[in-house]
Length: 46
Image (cartoon, rainbow, N blue to C red; front, top):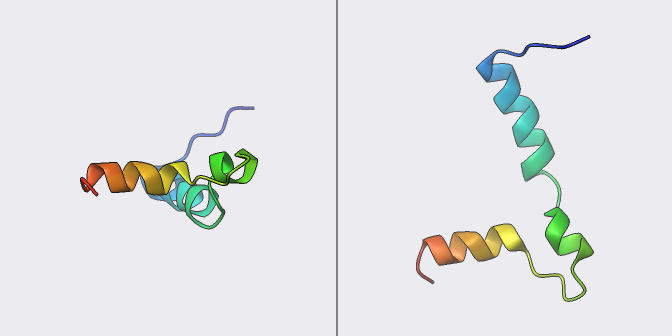
C-alpha cells in the first residue's frame, strides 16, 4: 500500500530522520568526517 504525505508531514518526518542523528557518512567513515558539516563549510566558503 502506497502512502501519500502532504508537504508539512513529509518535512516533519524528514527533519527527524536527517537532523537528530549523526550523518551516516560520519558514523561509517574511519576518521568520522561529517559530510553534512563539510558541505556546509564549503557552502559558506570556510
